[in-house]
Image (cartoon, rainbow, N blue to C red):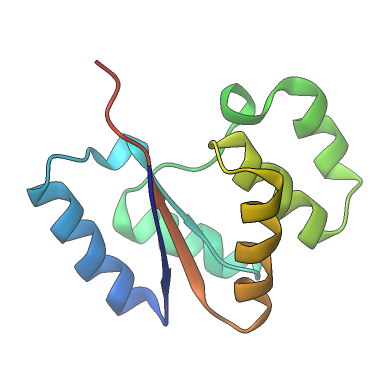
Length: 108
């Protein structure tokens, strides 16, 4: 797994293109932003994957409906494989307006 902190969507697009050259598939690339609309916009415009129930589990997905955005983001980070400590670290980066990209190695 590779994780990157980026300044904006332009950097995200460049990083995604680089990761595709390295063999990553867009189905295994996730973009996170603190603002849910920005996050959705980035995901839609880069054709990357959104974190779904299969990534985080049904209990966590339902819990996220009632959670703060920070709690929801940390749960989604953990859902794609980051540790609790990593999730906290990267959620802090989102507080500063950054974009976080997580690329999981392709399933065999």
